[in-house]
Image (cartoon, rainbow, N blue to C red; front, side, top):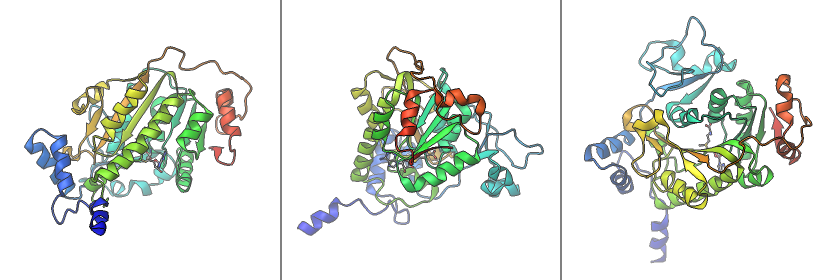
Length: 366
Ligand SMILES: C[S@@+](CC[C@H](N)C(=O)[O-])C[C@H]1O[C@@H](n2cnc3c(N)ncnc32)[C@H](O)[C@@H]1O
């Protein structure tokens, strides 16, 4: 008795494609889609590895002649992003990450699902001076946000120590400066610099169900225990993210999973506890509006053929108050090696000083 009980509490073995879709996947499809054809297309798209067009996010001018073959841009695509045409017989398209321009930091390789989610940031009409990317490694959303919003300072935080190296190396390669990489639990950051950020990005650790659309294994990703655990972790991160946002600032929450308990569910939880956060429409993503919430949020699914799938919601802090309060202490702390012209911006925030003072071994200017 005891034994079989224990076994049934474990996440189901993978949604193994060879043996057909699992009961849990079919159940998810039922919840996600009203139409049988959509359900079937979704389940089918998770049953075979697909290659989705990778994207190049340009940080420098495109070279001429252009060594890549790009697909026609989508309406929501920023003009500094290319989707590579995988059907083209173009040697550079095969391994863009090996191209010398990549090493030179001229572009960053990103999957389209990430571009989709991050493109919600383009709907922010305000100047974003102070940006915190709370779950940053390996750095894709940081690079996108930097390119899109040109903040005065980026704090790229990664909670898992062993992932910091790749984050720092990517931010350095792409020349993101001034920037600081921190390795902190979101709660510590929220306590250190509460109400500091004009924008907080939460690209949250999640159940990662979309990995299956890329042919990767993710055992148990549809199991309620996996989803519940991830939803709870996201709620904790989101609550701390909310504490980091300045009055009038912004919070973008995104995942690469399909579960409603994460995504819309975690967002609703946040809205119930932080009613001053207001979901904002993103006009460019309206064709992808989620039907699983009354508030505006967006989903892209793998059966569309664009990417493995993602979710995004953009929230504005509706409290009155300047998004950029006057710095309490105008003394520069660190002139920032790569961009002396911005030195005052780099150092003149008291909160930033305390961030640098706080565990200087764990936060370093890039
Ligand atoms: C989806 S990935 C981020 C991808 C990254 N934003 C990008 O675009 O390259 C989620 C990140 O959250 C980190 N993470 C894991 N547990 C966390 C926690 N409890 N709090 C904050 N971040 C966490 C993971 O290490 C991982 O780097």
